[in-house]
Image 1: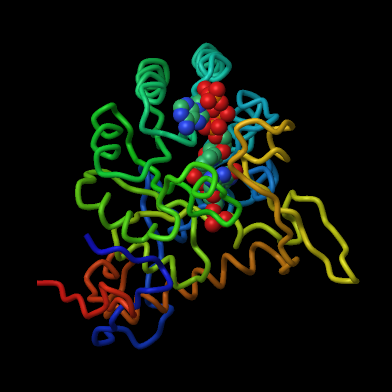
Image 2: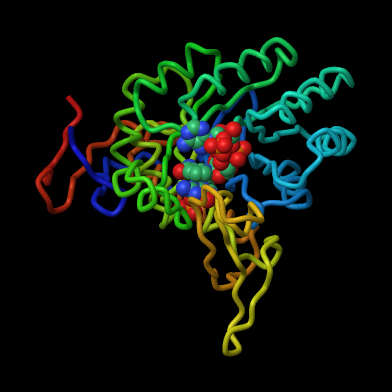
Amino acid sequence: MEIFDYDKVLLLPRKCRVTSRSECDASVELGGRSFRIPVVPANMKTVVNEQICLWLARNGYFYVMHRFDLDNVKFVRQMKAEGVYASISLGVKPADYETVDRLAAEGLVPEYVTIDIAHGHADTVKNMIAHLKEKLPATFVIAGNVGTPEAIIDLENWGADATKVGIGPGKVCITRMKTGFGTGGWQLSAMKWCARVATKPIIADGGIREHGDIAKSIRFGATMVMIGSMLAGHEESPGQTVDEGGKLYKEYYGSASDFNKGEYKHVEGKRILEPVKGKLADTLREMEEDVQSSISYSGGRKLMDIRKVNYVILGGDNAGEHLLM
Ligand SMILES: NC(=O)C1=CN([C@@H]2O[C@H](COP(=O)(O)OP(=O)(O)OC[C@H]3O[C@@H](n4cnc5c(N)ncnc54)[C@H](OP(=O)(O)O)[C@@H]3O)[C@@H](O)[C@H]2O)C=CC1
Ligand SMILES: Nc1nc2c(ncn2[C@@H]2O[C@H](COP(=O)(O)O)[C@@H](O)[C@H]2O)c(=O)[nH]1
């Protein structure tokens, strides 16, 4: 198997078919809705909050609200009152089952639920998918996180409508160091490996460091990418602002860090400071323009045309050109 990550791959251009990048359509479909770009901000406390999620939904973006110190039922109710779709995260504990039961009892049906646990290839996830499908059958269920084809096959067979791939490639992840496991350092080839068996959409989660990594994820089978660090650190981001030597930073911490958990137990995440980088809306607009450019280099007009291009691997044992036959 080829092992590579985002920084070791470049996509090869094909003859241009547009006269302006604005002709390229960066939108993507997930769960029956169309979104402007194949990007979703990570469901983390220092990346999204209620206001940001509402803004994202109103402006044509996909969002997944985090699940920490939050009344999910109240959140769904508020989003419905605003006339936008509701997209929440759940774990697999008794309180999460209670949330599903309360939503069902009130007739509040979130359009999307993401089951979001560290080791998503587990019977706990199988049981939660079954519960969701029984109580909220119209909800689109995303399940993760996983990093192998076996896990993708199981999650899909258990009823997940989409899966999320990425164990430890995130900027504030320390899973790799703490446990010796994960897809950190080879996330892009893990995506390729998983996509070979997937019959439903995959969200590539973690490790995106450049806008061009979005196109690379699509090329290797992602439908959407989840981004934390690059979408944290904005003026409106929820993390605390820190002034260091006159330069402004925003905190960004892992969901499995002691900062999120409130205790040092089974810690697999850390806290860093991200330089404050302007408005989230501007970064998302630039990402859209860059994805449009990627589509134009692929010789296409729509997002999935990126899947058709060849690529090269730079340096290392797998180096070489890879042609689609
Ligand atoms: N993508 C990634 O690489 C990672 C992401 N995270 C993020 O951190 C947040 C917290 O995750 P998580 O701790 O799972 O959520 P929870 O604290 O909600 O735990 C979910 C359940 O899974 C159990 N659990 C957690 N890890 C394992 C494991 N390795 N093996 C068996 N059972 C496990 C927990 O029990 P117990 O705690 O008692 O073991 C608990 O019952 C999530 O948002 C998750 O996505 C965390 C780590 C890695
Ligand atoms: N191993 C851990 N992974 C975590 C933790 N908190 C979040 N995450 C994952 O990281 C991505 C974001 O990655 P980035 O490279 O874009 O910053 C996020 O979506 C989660 O899957 C954690 O504490 N430990």
